[in-house]
Image (tube, rainbow, N blue to C red):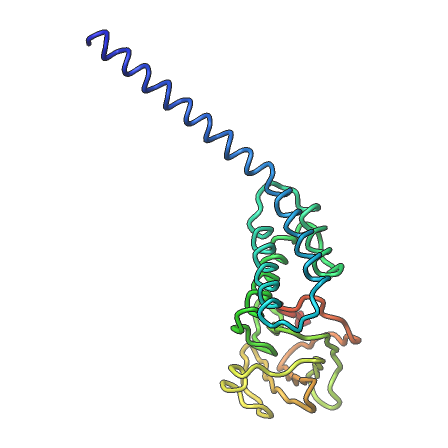
Length: 229
């Protein structure tokens, strides 16, 4: 090989190594300051939220979309700063209770909630009822809380959810006031005794769900899991 070609190969290799090293430095820097960027966005968003009166629908939806973006970035974080991200989520949600290690799951649900609110695509209410892995699941959007009480003279319970309705898609598939088989020896019926509550009557061939005094549901979009004992 000619000396000139050897020198060219050496130069190309050196440039490639330099570019790779620079890319690694940039990638490290982005990862290192990602928390600081998200924290700064959180501070700015809180100031905007505090200053908003909610009267400008377009501006308010913009705030909701920006909140969704912040929560989405927290959901995708990989730098192991769970406690610090959890603190940001609590600041944005006025101290939503959850464990630090669950911050990405919580942030993902909040991102979906705020994005759906902004775009008008989120269906509120009781959206799904199922039995899975020995538990009754109630998927909801926008529900204040629930309670569980045993039925008199029957093997079952009445679950009362407050400040919520039945989602249209659920009502279309399962008419209100009618029992249907949910599976695993469980029958269920939804009723709306008034405009702000939903009762779910559940009958069991075997087992039951423990009684529960009224309990707040702080997550606006989540699945209530009630073990069948």
